[in-house]
Length: 267
Image 1 (cartoon, rainbow, N blue to C red):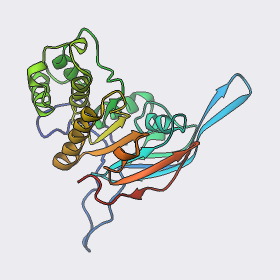
Image 2 (image 1 turned 60 degrees about the vertical axis):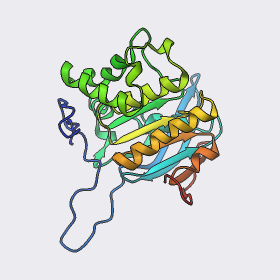
Image 3 (image 1 turned 180 degrees about the vertical axis):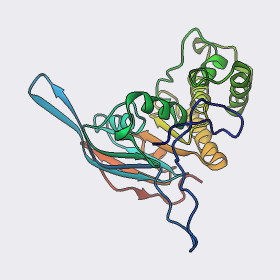
């Protein structure tokens, strides 16, 4: 099984190697069909309530997302979409089913291997930002690189570049309590990009923002998708935001429908 290494083209040097998330070179006779970067097969997830009753939250989920796609998963509160994101993001494990992340079978990874893959291959953006309080924006962005073993000078340089990318160069020494909601989310997006992940998972990233600020945050995701080729999975209950993505998957009571292409999405 291959494990994560730094892959930020010289910007980030990490101690181990990321899974092969993009399709490898083709054969001699023309193009090769792309390999999904995320592939879930017959995923179930249940939680025990008490000692004898199991609540099934995910019911036979099948999902294939390809490198460089910008997709959305929509559903009402309690539909199971956040549980699904936790499984995709290696924050939780399914009760049964198979999960391939690129060419890596996650069911064969132990907790330490899964944590390493997660830290270098997946970036997270949450509704409530999840920034570290009493720590300025610069250090918040540096933290994932510090955990990955990146040297101080190198992580400082990359954090500054990322904060510039999201328009926060003038707020690098501000703590979360000194930032607006939109500014916090921009810092959170920079932090998600710290280890140059192939995949960004965004769980209701505009849910705590006003409409105008939410659109600015979506513009950032479009830039990352268009200019850097990131694979982005947006979890939302907002159908208007979902229409900005390339495919929409709808979840109802733990059952995931097929992805529906959107006209003009992710332009």
